[in-house]
Length: 76
Image 1 (cartoon, one colour):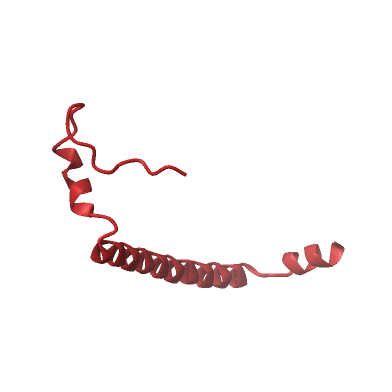
Image 2 (cartoon, one colour):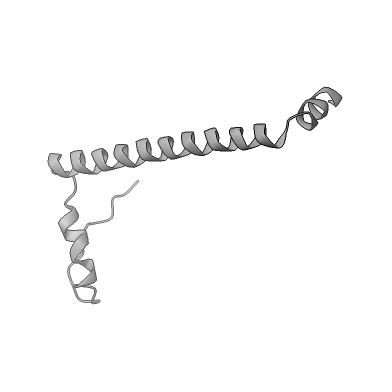
């Protein structure tokens, strides 16, 4: 355990800044990949006809208690 603390205490401020810079870059790249994968998933699901997202877009306009249900609840 003492070896790890000695190693961490020997790292300079400039080295920590470099680690932070690389970490931020890889985090941003990872988040962009996840976002594009999610967009592709949404596009494919709507293209197959499994879900119609235009109905969900109308929820802001048709939000009354007596309006039609957008999607029936699936049982588990």
